[in-house]
Image (cartoon, rainbow, N blue to C red; front, side):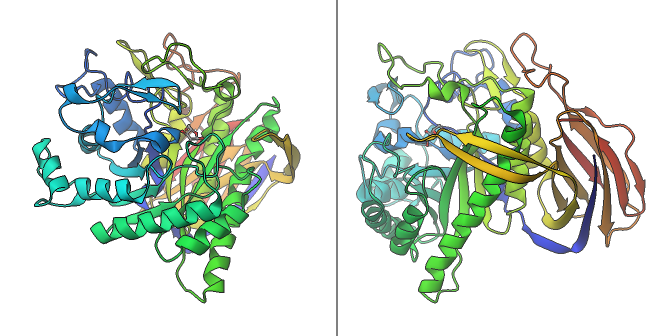
Amino acid sequence: PSSKVLLDRDFAIGTTDRRLFGAFVEHLGRCVYGGIYEPDHPSADERGFRGDVLKLVRELGPTIVRYPGGNFVSGYDWEDGVGPVEKRPRRLDLAWQSIEPNTFGTNEFMDWCRLANVEPMLAVNLGTRGPDAARRLVEYCNHPGGTTLSDLRREHGWPEPHDVKFWCLGNEMDGPWQMERKTPVEYGRVATEAAKMMKMVDPSIELAVCGSSARTMPTFGEWERIVLEHTFDHVEYISLHTYLNNYAEDTAAFLASPDLMDSFIEEVVAIADAVAAERRSSKRIMLSFDEWNVWYRTRRGDTRVREGWPVAPPILEEVYTMEDALAFGGACIALLNHADRVRAACLAQLVNAIAPIMTQTGGAAWRQTIFWPFADFANLGHGKVLRTQIDCPTYSATYYDPRGKEDLYFPLPEVPYLKLAAIHGDDTLTLFALNRHLDEPMRINVSARGFSELALERAQTLHNGDLRAANTQDDPDRVRPEALQGVEIRGSEVVATLPAASWTVLRMR
Ligand code: AHR
C-alpha cells in the first residue's frame, strides 16, 4: 500500500513533557535485586549498582522512573527500607509472594536516579497504610531538616532533601488483587486526605490519583468520575494502565491494539473534563500513563503462589519478540499523539520484569526487542507534536482482552495500516512510523508544510522476517535497527518505503 501524510509546522497537538518518557522500577522479581542492584556483580559500584545496567539505562533514555510499585507498594512500609542496612527487616511481600530483604530502599533509589540521570516518581502506600504514612514519607524525603523525620534522613547519610516532585497516590486501588483494594468512594476519600497532608508538608509536589487499573475493568469510567469528584481540587494527574496482549495469536489485531490506547486516553480526558465542567472549573487534570507495555505470556500463568518464599525470583521475565516491538512502537505513537494531555508515562518496567533490559544474575545484560522503539521514542521524541492527516488503506480486526473474569472483544473496523507521529524539535522534524501491513512494504509520501530544504539526518528501521524473533543472552543482537535505504527528500517532501511489519524513524534537519 501507499500513504499520504500531510502536516504543517504551525499545527501542533502539544509539546511533549519531559516526563512522557518514563519507566518503572518495582520491587518485583529481579527488577531491583539482580537488576539495577547487585552488589556482587563484577560491574557493580561501591553502592551495589550494576554498571552494565546503568549504561543500558542511559542509552535507553528514560527521563523519570516510578518506584517502588506497583502492587508491591500497597503492602510496603517505607521505614523498612531506610537506615542501617544490617538493621532492616526481611518481610513477606504478599504482592509477589516473595521475601523482601529491604537492602535497597528509598535513599538507594534516589542515588541510583542521580546516576541514571532520571527524575524519581514515588508511589505511596494507600493500601495497608494511609495518609499519615504518606505525609511522613514526604517529610522524610523533602523537608530540609530540623524535624525528627528530616533529621533521620540526614542521620541516614542524606543531608540534602531529595526534593521529589512527582508522587502517585497508591497503585491500582480498584484491583481485586490489590492489598486493601477500595471502592471509588473509599479511595476518593483516602486519596483526598493523603493529598492534602502531603501538600501541607511540601506544597511544591504534584500528585497523580489512581484511575482504573485497566480500561477493561468493569468499573472503568465510574471509578474515574467518582475518584475525581473527590480529589479534583487536590491532584494534578490521573493514572492509566494498559498491557497489550496477543493471546489470540492474531498479529493484525495485536498491532491494531495501540489504537485502543488512543481511545482510552480520549475517554479519560472526557471524564476528567466532565468533572471539571460540573464544577465550572477551568482546571485541566492531566494524564499519567504510568504503566504501559506488552505483557501476556508470563501473565496468565502467574498465580502469584510461589513455594518457599524466594528472594527476587525470576518472575514476569517476558521475552519480547519482533512482533511485540511493533505493538510497543504503536503505543509510543499513541502517547506522543496525546502529548497535550498525557504529561507523564512510564514503561512498565525497566529491568528483567516485563522489561526492555534483561540480565543474568552475576552475568551479562542485554537489550530486548522493545528496547529499540523506546530508545527512539525517549531520545528523539521530544518537541512539538504535529497534527498529521494520514490518507492510507485500512483493515479490520477484533482485539481480544481477557482482563478480569470476562472475555472481551474489541472490534476495530478501520485500522489504518500506517500509524505515525511527527515531532518538531528545535531544528528537526522526526517521524515515527509503524507499518502494520504484515506482507507488503508501504510507500509513504509526507508533505511537511512550512518546512523548507529538509535534509535527512537519520533513517532507521526495525524489522525481521520472523515476527517471533527475539534477543536472548546467546543472540542479543538478533533484532536491532538497521539503516533504511532509499529515502528521498525534495524540499519539504519526504518519500520513503517502509518494510512490511516495521518500526521506522526518520529524522530530518
Ligand atoms: O507491572 C506489573 C504489575 O502490573 C504492577 O505491579 C501492577 O500495578 C500492575 O497490575
